[in-house]
Length: 136
Image (cartoon, rainbow, N blue to C red; front, side):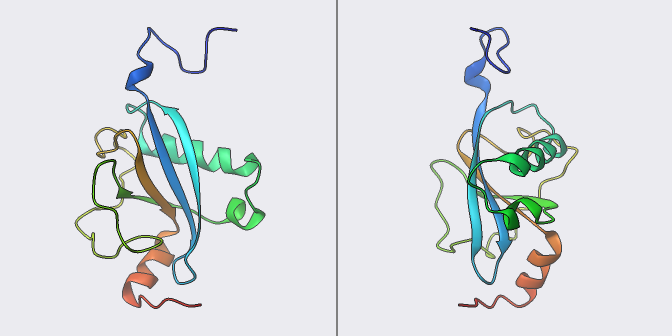
């Protein structure tokens, strides 16, 4: 079988690798990174979210609490060759980076190869922003 998933007219170089941090808890710094390869940048953010949700239901090695969490928002947390945040989960200093819009393509949202995204529940993020306390 030589035809791989998503191979069309040799433009595999156009596809990107994205790391998605599944954030279950901001205050407990509870997250798991999951890597998605061969993602077409023309995919809409909403479709990528569905792909991630479908994938994590059956991904081996992912604990059930991460599979069942109610994720509903994505945000860029790091891009290749950029400065990394010192925060373990997600920086609150990057308010200039909006949540991703589901109607945009990944490319329009600024996602390039080796971008890291946080995937979380928006209500949890808003609560943490309002009171950014770390719990141990």
